[in-house]
Length: 361
Image 1 (cartoon, helix red, strand yellow):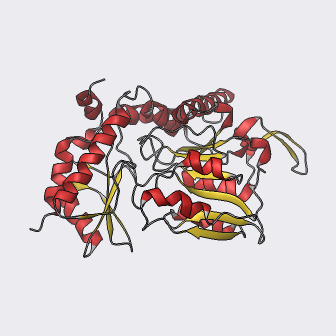
Image 2 (image 1 turned 180 degrees about the horizontal axis):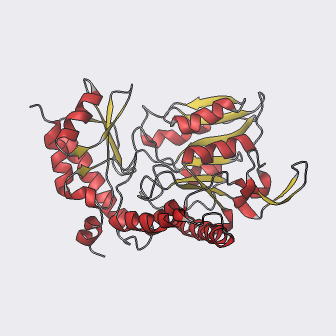
Image 3 (image 1 turned 90 degrees about the vertical axis):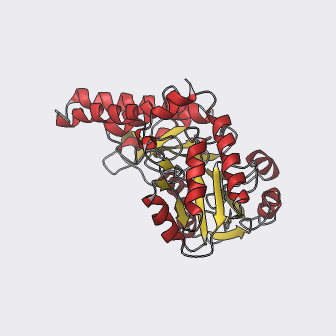
């Protein structure tokens, strides 16, 4: 697949410089078509035995394609509707109490922070947001102690795109590691196999429908099913006691429409082998052009595929002004930051349009 063919798959790029996959990725025509075709099943009979068997088979197939994205066994994948749901499943299943500590960073999304706070455990926050990326590991490890029952953080920080060195972190601590993969899976190469818990977003860098996602659990037997659903059980008793299903599927909580399953499978079919290198190249270009334009870029070189920069003024107004010029980025409310997301579909003109739109009128 050539770059031109890959880019042409996304109708939105015919008009827009779309630089916001860190929120929601662009949708390919083939993904939309697959969703429309699969949605016809909603006309029925929806409650037939055949329809139920088809959706169960489709769920199994989707676990397999998600597992392939992060290099793990499909039996260790649960389907979720978001990384936030996946984080809730893990944190609730660990049964943390007031004597237990969770270590995280000051650059996390509320989708992870909220469940940690609600767990009842004590949350220790490593200050990494305003430090050099190379200092993040030491800052995190400095918060880990004998009461640490979980280290929970993002692989790629959503505020500045910096990458946390997971292999070094996992080697340096015996505490379980929960990784939010919202800004990594589909953007950079990921091998989640050594990680205890790793979450996947389907609608961001994988360019699938909203809401879709997954959760990898290395040892399903070590995590309690805190929010059982019909999908959790292999058998159950009249009082609700149940035998969990094999593998990580026991943690699934949501019925995912056939259209969403088909859409994510289509989005992941035939991805170009060069996608990570291309995204890296465009991210580097974006960062450098923003620097050349005199902007205060906070993202260091050779990190993830997000580029953030400080803005002296109303960031929401800048986002609106750029949208009027068919350039789509986002601001990070309350932080004075703007953020661009560069994917394998991004071209030089997209970035040039962004930089031109940031110049004073």
